[in-house]
Image (cartoon, rainbow over all chains, first blue to last red; front, side):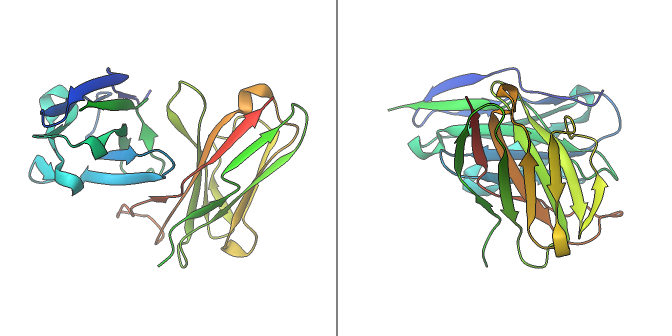
Amino acid sequence: AQSVTQPDIHITVSEGASLELRCNYSYGATPYLFWYVQSPGQGLQLLLKYFSGDTLVQGIKGFEAEFKRSQSSFNLRKPSVHWSDAAEYFCAVVWYRDDKIIFGKGTRLHILP
Amino acid sequence: EAGVTQFPSHSVIEKGQTVTLRCDPISGHDNLYWYRRVMGKEIKFLLHFVKESKQDESGMPNNRFLAERTGGTYSTLKVQPAELEDSGVYFCASSQGSGGATYNEQFFGPGTRLTVL
């Protein structure tokens, strides 16, 4: 079955530190890949997406993600986190010609001052 | 331009009661989707409308859930009768176009938090 795995439920980092959130999808044809963020009281906001081409994609708020086909991974990174980055992050995929989004379980990011 | 809106933001009902959630998509978006997240689980697809037609309802959990999109504008999701396991956050999303070979970004609303006691 098609699935998305985010192995870390919670991650805590200090403000200013670097961040990497992990995401793997089930093996098969390369899907469209996304990272969403949900801040408290807000809807899901698209951070970045990968459809094809350059495997390092830049998103909003200083985030980037790298697609690695050999590892079926799409990890999210940020060189220096800010307190406002505290939120829940969802990795997601859409398989070609299928509109429904398949989400991972989410990683909640906590920021230490 | 207004985003996707959902009403209510939070609903608390007792088991056995009926609740209706509403979603207003971005104006002009033909595609409307419902997703939900129950406690501790991932966000899961429920169904997809193209205009007023149900394109895919493979994610609807059972016949206690009824979704409508009259006139191809706003959509409602009714749960009748509600059960404890229906508690969670219900998200609506909308996108332009008719799909096909091009993926159209889905824009999400803030969600409705449903609590069934």
